[in-house]
Length: 236
Image (cartoon, rainbow, N blue to C red; front, side):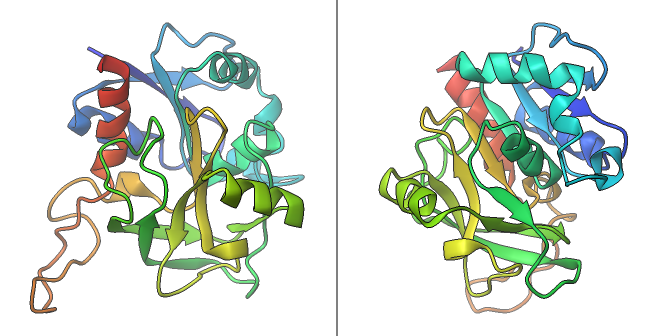
């Protein structure tokens, strides 16, 4: 069975949710501790959401130099799939595995909502089972989710097709170009601010609607394909 490591830092909140998502997708979650410079033979790594090290200094900055991240960086540069969700996205930027930075939301408030996204790039290890321009709804919760980069870097991300997810209908934090997630040039490292691990199980996901626009309850499971995609990429 494909083994997916889930890293826990002090202050991580969503490691169990990420591990459950891996399990429901058909993989074997493997707990990785921030102090251990050992990836335990996993096939991919997830950096989950939370407030690593209390978000002191900058969000993700201390986590980026944790012992386990040295191994994650080396593995990512050799092609291992790595996913950073929310705080994990911040850690990837601070580790320079992804460009840009996540700064304070432009409205200066913590924001929580079910967020509509559009798949811009289905050709990464984490989006292979999505269709181009597919729409999905997953929860979003952040206070520093405002993705920014230099004009030159933004032009490069757009020109190289490295924007993976884009906010639809509402930009919840002021991110440049409505960017919700990006990838590296190889497509094995992906970071996104919304939380697909909270949209994996019928009855517990975001509110969904039927074909007539009426409420269909908490049925949203559109985040599960992110975790299924990496398993498909690894065994395919």
